[in-house]
Image 1: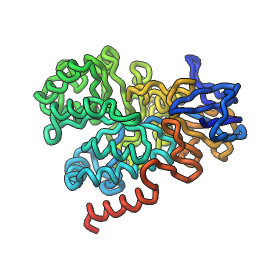
Image 2: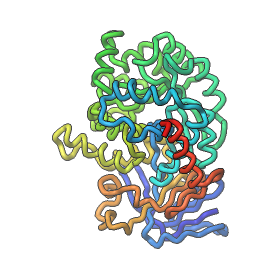
Image 3: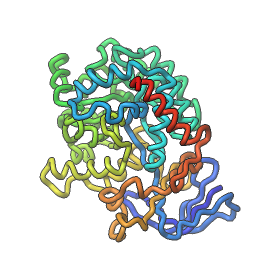
Length: 423
């Protein structure tokens, strides 16, 4: 058992966020005490936060492609279609499972350093991704990547059955890359899987104007309407990006309990557009994701929160647009709901997936409004600890991983990148 004393606890209710002074205890991967009075049990370790440490539910990165760390800053300042087809796809063709495992572990180090306790990862070679999660202690929800060039509905079903219940840390969701890379026959096969298992389906959707206009040209429908027609949304799911969704699209999403995952940094860097954040927050449930390290290029949820809050103000010419508290909720709890992990609040019985913020950092002072400070002023340097499943994996610059050292991860990722790029 680990006991945090003299802590500040970020709590959430229907009235919004509050910060309470108190004690938090974890045991066996769950929070056992969250309040003012400690248990009578003897802890293995007591951590006195001295009133300066804010415990939050860890950030949930609700859309990413972790193994794309090898392409960080490789192909920048390009539009999405050329970036993807001329740079990303050719380089990804050089990957195998071992490369993916090494590059994913590098991303997981960055997540832990940045207070991210779970990621919703869309990438190939799920065996390698699962192994990387087990070696680092990362909570990983994988998403299917089916398209016309990789995988199939049959393989998707195999992954779905094999990786759900695989371990405490790893699970799997049905998914496909996008409408523009996946034939109707394959999408119909995925719809049948969704109906067979009463399972949600996830995909990139309405990321660019070109994607939407070409889908209308092919099918006479926007991507959400097309997916609805095919029966892909009957059990809910999620749309990554949701930048160019119409009011009718939002009604389809609301009707079918489809989440929107907002990725402001990637959408800005690729000039895809600004998501209608205010309309999304009013209409559907939302999470926030970094997207991959090739299109962001950081894996930093603080930056995502900031942009998700300020870009709609600029876009709508309204400084009240993009509520900081709504954005914070999407980052710490909404993403967990997207992944099927639950809201993951700081309450007894919830998973012990937490991060600790140093409130004595200059950028976090004064404490006029701590939740807003997290969104508008916070950055990864404020993270002093990250715990997943009750295990402290990062603390004050030091990683304690279950299967490999951070030094090995870094050296192996460097060597793998050198081979990929033939340096």
